[in-house]
Length: 150
Image (cartoon, rainbow, N blue to C red; front, side, top):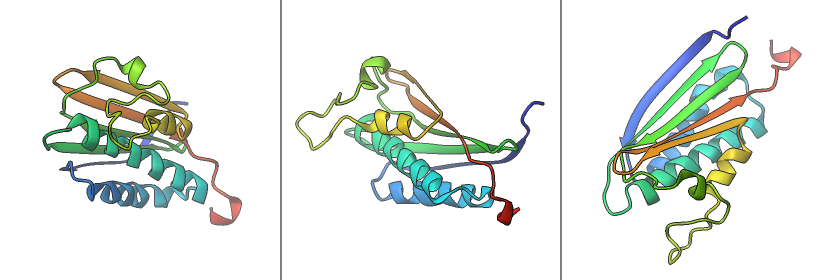
């Protein structure tokens, strides 16, 4: 049976570092009615923080712009979260997804953002066009609800 969408959010905020915590809070509030485990919530919050940080540090490197956060929840407990910017884009997505790759070697950047996002998701897709921006989509299926909470 096809999964049915049960909830959706979309919001936008300025590419400022203090908005990383805003994005984590928004996602937490969206996920809480689904009763995720503490680990699931921590994993997804971390992945979203990495995605938003990439927008700020890389997408809008010398400027600022808007970041869009969207999330959809489905009745099979799958969540799909997107983080989108309209920044400089990524020239080579495959290279950017390699562990330890960074476009900021002179800064304190470890080049593990996409690896971290991927480790906390069931599926991670990245689409980007130079000069147009980047979209990261994280898909994660939450564990079945515990019997005592249903």
